[in-house]
Image (cartoon, rainbow, N blue to C red; front, side):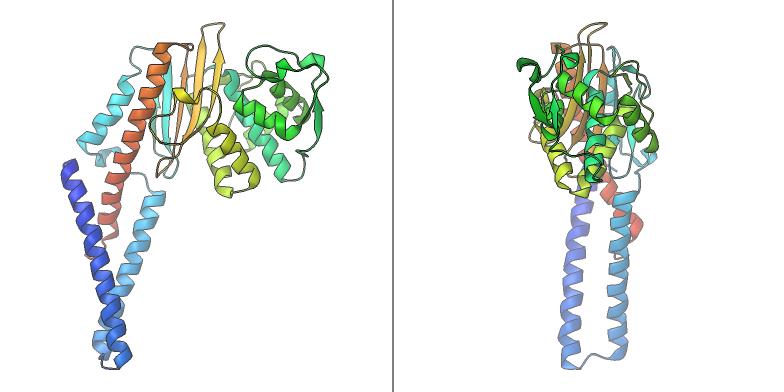
Length: 337
């Protein structure tokens, strides 16, 4: 079935559904109120209403839980997927796309690990917010910038004097928005070290491989981080909202934001040992998806082009995927059949 036929079918289905539903409701209440509706006709309309209700519930359940299998993809959708994968045929980079509603995923080198760099700051910050939600951390507590935390690289605390104090909430903000290396070191000490972060994430089913305070990253693990961020976002707490807000304003957003789609992300860059550049992101399309990219391309024009093109095509894939899934779920739920 072509994309054009799919679009027409879906639109016609929705129009017909709405029209029949309104007609049934209107006629039913009109005659039942006047007391002229026979029992048999009334029962028939009750059955129609019941079928519409059940079918609608089945459709919504299908859309929210089921994966559209690749054997049901149109040629256009398969081609879009292959187009994204082909971007990675001749570059030192890997990626993974994950639909956050149905968990459908695809990618290239999904389990290959590279040096994570600052991406690993994200799981530490999420853990801290969770601890705060449980009353185990006080976000108003003041932390002191000690000499042992002194570091170069990314961040803004390095511009201040040793001995400067910061609220824990500010440290968390700086660690995400500015990828602050000093703030991250202060945070790890407050949390009890990276061992505590690793244990927390192991409890969620993820294994963080630390070689130092940053460790390694695979696209699959990156999407795992984003899955947990998305779950946290859905809780709607003030701390969850703050984390997403900071991720939406985090440095280097311009390398992963395509069009007007909002993106909450965390990047990681390490210029030594191969020029690692990575990014994990939550993309707020109508049906949100996670996208993680790891590379040894450094902060280069080649990297920027690859990351932006991957995001652009992934948005196109995501939109088409849900268009076809909508048709599939409408047929499966047998509404008005």
